Length: 221
Image (cartoon, helix red, strand yellow):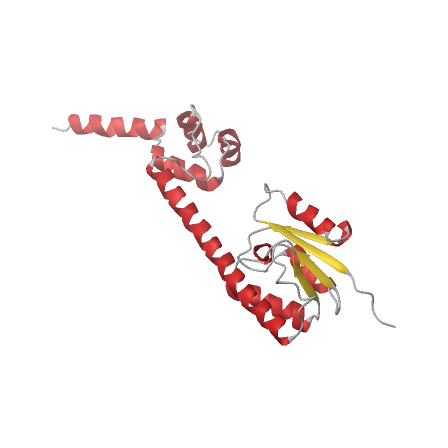
């Protein structure tokens, strides 16, 4: 008794705010059941993706895998080809790339067909990686230009409350605990001490001592 061939689909977008609808629709049209479509919302720079790993474990000899385009599989030249070999030779499955009919291992299994498919795969995987490098470069240039315009990235700087000096003096005089100070200021311990050093808050006791020292100096005979 032979194992029944199963059709799977894989879709990928680069971030959680991107939509995979177009890919899913194309996979459905190819006959892939919804339950067999695996989706990752992650960069294609490597293959360390949860749903992709789950899919590979599920695939068995004779199954079919559909993807819309080669860059949905990944964007690393060497890794795309390595994964292709794993899937087609080690796992023994067929792959159908919808946007590139020449990359359909279900047909053209003779020597010429295999040669053409390998050649097309090399070209497309090179293009996929080149596009990733281009996107990264444009992002870096955009960030650099934004920084020149004064745009700040990351978390907004934590500001101290208006009564920061007063609450610090109460803490120094042991009227309140450090925990109460942190809760009042909405800061972590590290941020509190950094702000303390930046603002150079001096306690009333220290100010009084400083004034007394200055008075003694003035009264020296």
